Length: 308
Ligand code: RIB
Image (cartoon, rainbow, N blue to C red; front, side, top):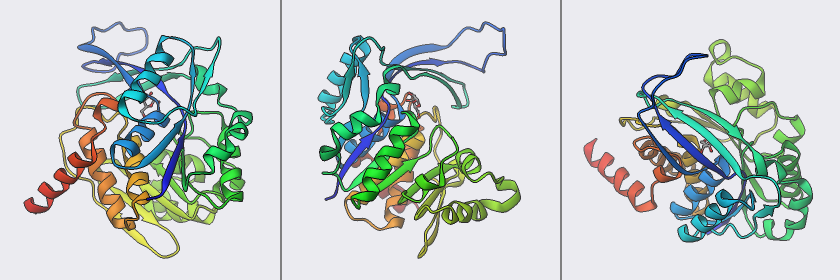
């Protein structure tokens, strides 16, 4: 089995369930509130870990109660986060999340210590990072850090999976070092500068491939996902479920994809597995509390195949 390193954010999510999103200047009563672990990096690392991958997680946390709780929680979950940076005088990252009755969310992040995960720190732990075969990244840590990891991985022949969330423009130099680029529609449009409505889903994927990514996966929510590289074009439908909260669906998809790839499965198997994991995730509230285990996903897939 291949080894995975996930390098990215860790947040404490403050989650409010509401009926509908408030307008500017409006005060509304929420339905319920809870706190749980989140952050796109941590969600993807935990997903890859729960779904059977051999994972190390590198993050940056403050020396505050959120940071200490996070490290305690990862330990309890069996997720190795010991390579993480613990910083003085900067609070750990937090995210304020509203989820409406349709399961749609709106998220505000205060990055805090996540911003301190510097290229210098990456160089300090470079040897450890290079023990991995697959390196998984997102965009909630400094852009220069993502670039540094891509350079190191490329120079040393390691695979990079980059999930460009939250969306931002990328230098072509980075895109050329990406083995697996995972994007949703907004992210694909931001990177390519094209509009899906104008050039179509396959058109935008082709544009990203032309920029240098080796394999592009475009996630389309309820419409499933598309994968394209120089040998394959796949379209995998999404599983139909009743969504209560879409938070971390994309993260669960990426973590599941990494885990299944690390076990040597083919692209189609990986996408079906990742879609199933994401489908289970949206049926529950919160980011990390919603990430399923490998057994849950296998049972879900077995049930679906007997129901066809
Ligand atoms: O993708 C969902 C995540 O985005 C949340 O857990 C939140 O922390 C933000 O990083």
